[in-house]
Image (cartoon, rainbow, N blue to C red; front, top):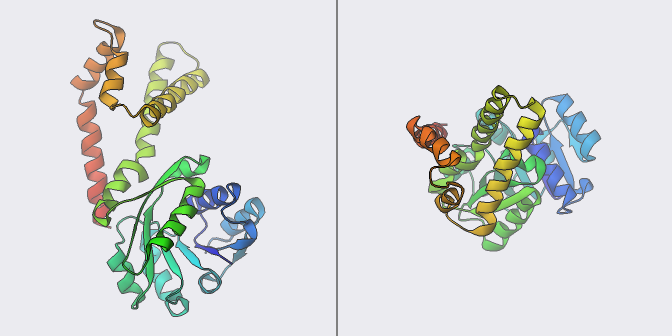
Amino acid sequence: MKLGFIGCGNMASAMIGGIIRNEIFSADEIIASDAFAPSLESAKNKLGIHTTGSNKEVARKSEVIVLSVKPQYYETVIKEIADVVDEKRIIVTIAPGKTLEWIGNMFGKAVKVVRTMPNTPALVGEGITGVCQNVLVNDAELEYVCGILRGFGKAEVVPESLMDVVTSVSGSSPAYVFMFIEAMADAAVADGMPRDKAYKFAAQAVYGSAKMVMETGMHPGALKDMVCSPGGTTIEAVRVLEKEGFRSSVIEAMKACTNKARGL
């Protein structure tokens, strides 16, 4: 077995699905465990991977071990598998707030650790994952892990000091975007558009706008200015957003998210 997941919830399943679809690993090379039996059964049926009720079995059989459980369960899981994790295996974490130093201390020995923060667009192969590693992980091993992470989107190496910022700008931010789409759709419905069409128009506008930022390389402000004709409808909407504190609300929300991640 090459890849193991301890925890097989929504995020792990999204990651595994992308990895298999993009032929990073075959289903036969992946094993997962989970304390919740229905999650394991679902993963086995939908993804065709190996499953087990034993976290130790996953750790023992895998070259790369992804700890895909909630942050509050990390200490328990690490203590459970520590004696079967050796210096050849790579531990990949996806929990906010759990530093490389903290993970190393929990294992109580020299362990290769790659800390990551993926996001839910991994479900559709459009995730982005922040990545950093401890000193025991060499460049080739880091690239190997990044190659796995690219199975469900993009992977960007950042200093560990920025990992909590990654949580707010990408890990949690799909929730803000979904709220924005929902709010735009609600407004369209209020003005008479059927809800199914309102969601389609709003979601496609957000998707297309994001694609413009990624593909043109232009500053978002410049792209905004291209839409705002003098005395037109768009600049009037922008004026109201600024009046109501749109930017400030986003900034304050993200700073609160970053601070929460630092405290986990």
